[in-house]
Length: 323
Image 1 (cartoon, one colour):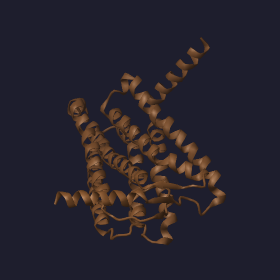
Image 2 (cartoon, helix red, strand yellow):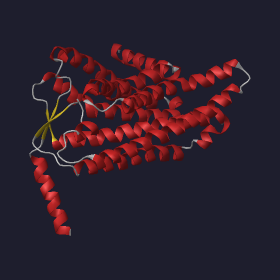
Image 3 (cartoon, one colour):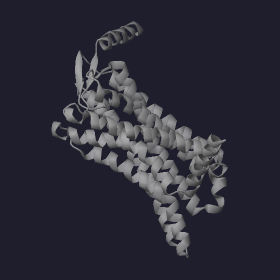
Image 4 (cartoon, one colour):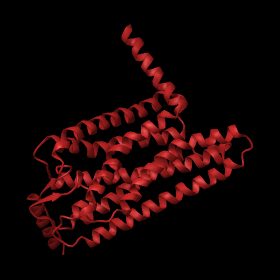
């Protein structure tokens, strides 16, 4: 039994050695290659600077050493990693003729992209719970959201995402692939990979659909339940100023959640046929490239503490430069 299983893995290894994928990306629009390169390069630069800058700002300002910013620093780390897994290959394929990616490279990109997108799904849910505790139990906030609990929630998000990604990748590797295949996307995502499989992908598709549905519904239940309680609590507040302050602390998070889950639900609703691939590509760009850039902007534009820290860092650098 063990010998046959080992032989199976050797055969699988020999099969994958000759497999090459070609990421079509936006090759059907040759006149847009350079403009798209410049746009995506700008977005990626803002993403890297914005997310690493957010992590730095949170670290250097003691006022930001709170549970909310602890979660936000991890969200920035996830967005940075997610964008870095996808965007460099996208940029490369926009300026070179050879758009090939090895089987191993494609599977690794899929594996890490899965980890970061699932982690972000639950990190946003954790942040919704954090806002619920902050608004509904403000006096017990620092006690309820202890450092131990915050670390546990973050670790659980990462751990579950790794379990999901390993499961998806395992079932992808059970499929057969042969020769050179064209992937009709700019990223190695599940639907595009199974579309070029030489074997029946139904089990892999059912597995990822079941996990993705569970992840989306469970995270949305946490988010919606948290915000129902927040809304009820805020409406009971006697002063208008108190209501405004409470809603303003949640506005950035609500915006991020709406954009993130709105894009996911849109991708769920798009029919899986050839005519809809361009819509899938555009939504995938928004999902993998644009959202990681938007999150630090959303959280910094409405946040005075973050803005003040950024200005202090800029002034300090200018002062040191003059010295």
